[in-house]
Amino acid sequence: KHCFTKSKDGFLCCENLKVQEIMENVEKRPFYLYSKPQITRNVEAYKDALQGLNSIIGYAIKANNNLKILEHLRGLGCSAVLVSGNELRLALRAGFDPTRCIFNGNGKLLEDLVLAAQEGVFVNVDSEFDLENIVAAARIAGKKVNVLLRINPDVDPQVHPYVATGNKNSKFGIRNEKLQWFLDAVKAHHDELKLVGAHCHLGSTITKVDIFRDAAVLMINYIDEIRAQGFEIDYLNIGGGLGIDYYHSGAVLPTPRDLIDTVRELVLSRDLNLIIEPGRSLIANTCCLVNRVTGVKTNGTKNFVVIDGSMAELIRPSLYDAYQHIELVSPASPKAEVSTFDVVGPVCESADFLGKDRELPTPAKGAGLVVHDAGAYCMSMASTYNLKMRPPEYWVEDDGTVSKIRHGETFEGHIRFFEGL
Ligand code: LLP
Image (cartoon, rainbow, N blue to C red):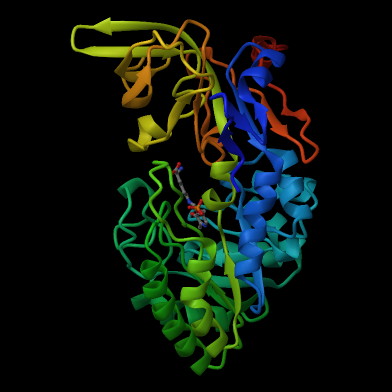
């Protein structure tokens, strides 16, 4: 079951509520619309897949940091994966148990590491200087830090280069040639560090589970090597990265179960706890960005649908040439001509498009138009370029009512940054 469906009379619905009606009832600006039950279903899919394994589902907060959503994910049993001190503070605010959270990153700041050490967060070691900082943080906090080594396994995730993180050109993690240096350093700092596991993250939007399997095989070999030197490590963290069906093509993509099943035997064979770090596959398909059509224009060879939303609210198409499915929320008039359009925003930038060459019935002014799969890396990457204000967020609750879960930013709020200067 998926939250976004078409009613018999051709209206787009979110959990059986017409998006057109929701649009008419909330403010007249772009907004993000989520389904809370869909978030639950996505987590349940991972939980079912993980049955029989000791595991932690570490939700990657960077994908979407709405506090209400975080509280819901925490209530469902997820822990959190963090890449900044503020993400850690927000995770604490949302009630996550810090001793099950994981702090990642190639440029973790000492002050943030101190907070992580105080709170007992797992920390992934990314480099030599990062290890030094973790040791310093442990001393300042007066606490031993549980660390995992982030190993770059050099596996090609077959995705856009900007979202590949585990190949040899990547700024993340340590290369296996250096593994011994890190093991010696951890040994030398046994008062500050306890090595508990190994981590890798290959990249994002991965649609072939073999890639995870290849990485897991390499990681298991590293774990054997590390254990052979007397380290009692229990955790294998295989990161996040599972892709979703952005194209709505009906193609059969790997599910959380497919992902977990490819590594299950390896994990069991070494009696490991499995940590996974999904972001996109938990949250992307639970949401769309709802926009209004400002007008339609033609420029010689190209037709454009101009909407009120833009690359400021949703940058993935501009930044990664990412495809996100677009549709009108209400059935078009039978007289509306179907044409090929670029769907663009009002921002002063030729990269400001949400979709290229989309077949759509020519929409009327004011028609609702959604960009699908906008739950991950959309609001969290939104900007205020051209002084567009970050949009409000709503979700459909379990009982079918609609609630606001984040206020939209306002011009007045923006002006406050300059008060009293
Ligand atoms: N763990 C680590 C260490 C990561 O770097 C990431 C994502 C994740 C977990 C979660 O990956 P996911 O399951 O969401 O694929 N802004 C880009 C995606 C950047 C992903 C960065 N790292 C996009 O919009 O496609």
